[in-house]
Image (cartoon, rainbow, N blue to C red; front, top):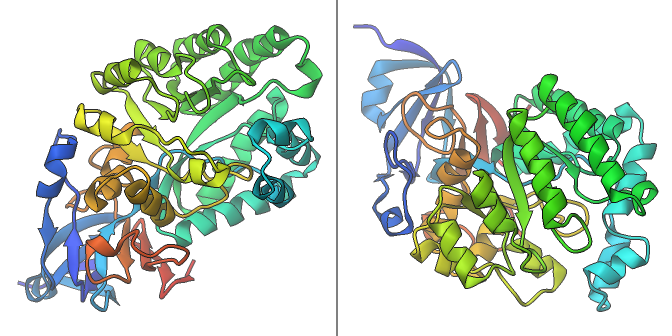
Length: 426
């Protein structure tokens, strides 16, 4: 019997962590340590963008004739990272604000100085389509170099119907150019723009009557998100926005309880949102409601670090109560300027008390499930998308141990080698 052709055969792995709970199952915290780890010498065969087989190298070498071999050189192989909360559609940076923050100014004081979200809005509105496309492409490539092979990505720095839809079109084009699967989210309700500050309901009318319908009808967004905070959208306006999005067939995601306990997580549960994210000000009662629901707790542990906040999301309380969770970067120019999920995993372990396997599951199979990609992304098994990462680590416990450096050696994206020896290969 002749070996079957395949596109890629990955060999030389120190170990392969599948993080696969099996068909139809999502792991709870107590189940994470039991997820499969395949031994050194496990190979992965890839064809037509899908994983075809995992098994001993000698066996797969007899069964498959690869067009290319990739040597993991003893690295630890994990599923491609899935970043379930990002804001990559922006221009420039806000490094001046970082200097202010290091001098002791807080989030709201920086906004009063002319910084914050509205500073990014001004830059994006001025940018040409070509400039914005180049910036988004660069941000996605930074994510890819750190092992992110798919992600959720939001608009939110245009704050006009035109610029929010333009942001989503450019996001779609940049992702398609790279072959990275992105779940796009309409975040027109990020903040009330300056021109509507005295008439917030007028802006909400535009979002509900024009922005959300256009994003849904044109297929530009799969989800809608709202920033529920005292300086952004209150609970009543957030409810109206989310209910309109749900009427239009969009999935729901919610920025909730980042700075104040306004009931955003409770609203997310009530409306059947995919997730409630941030949660640093989550009450114990609302943590129980979230844990008893199918709504995911989105843990963004690098954000309190970046903002110099003492409070963290009550992750241990949520996980021990049986909540679903994911770990994400919240990559954005103002409150968490990192595209690195390994860095987020470091903070998830150190600040939130997650085990390395809990944090890794949160950045792979659980993040994928929150986006409706359960079983296809964030796992290594036959039939799943051929997205995988080779870490320059001898064991999984090393993930997040070091920080400020990139542990990613190779990235395979949809069956193609996208990063090789730490360098982009697209």
